[in-house]
Length: 164
Image 1 (cartoon, rainbow, N blue to C red):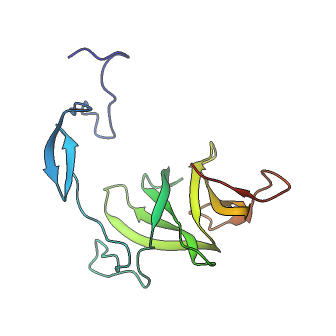
Image 2 (cartoon, rainbow, N blue to C red):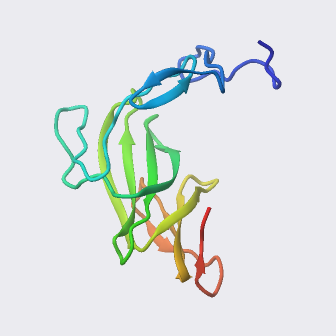
Image 3 (cartoon, one colour):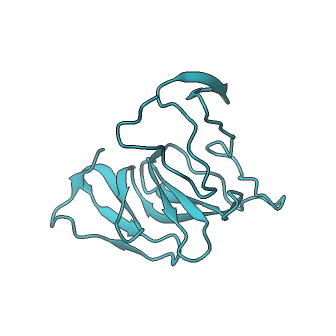
């Protein structure tokens, strides 16, 4: 197989990637994955999250997960998986699953109290911008899962309906 941009990307183990994008042949947890990939079920919406050490989260995984990104932990080689919750009436939020450098799930935190968090994106400085899809009243929020910093961003001077 020829790769349009050179060799496959190497991961943290320095082993070349072995999957073939679009070659959907591997069934896993109700999904069909490309050859060379695997999956594991981490949690389900509305359920407690089981951690590697045998404990569980104090809160349930958020409902209606939507826009998401992976953000590296700044000091230990682990990472965060952040995703929005597109719930109405100030029940929306951002949830962050925390993984250590071995890929073990070790924590779950929630951030913000908002409505209908839909789109968003990772910033170049490794924070998450979460945007509300809330008629003309939606705003965007910046969240840092490492420091737990949260603030409304000034994308515009009026609210919006931020969909991605």
